[in-house]
Image (cartoon, rainbow, N blue to C red; front, side, top):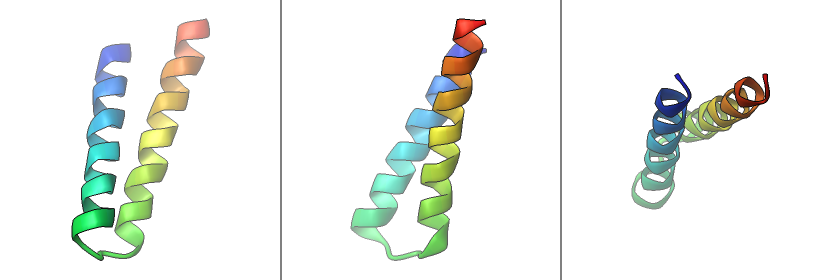
Length: 49
């Protein structure tokens, strides 16, 4: 499950970076970044259990 969360987080960060540098979509880009950070935090929290 952790690897899926990390993969999801990496894909969201890559999508966010593409959005920041290539497109000006607005709020959607920041939502992707927030989702990536949440995924990473969930992975870290679940690893410590």
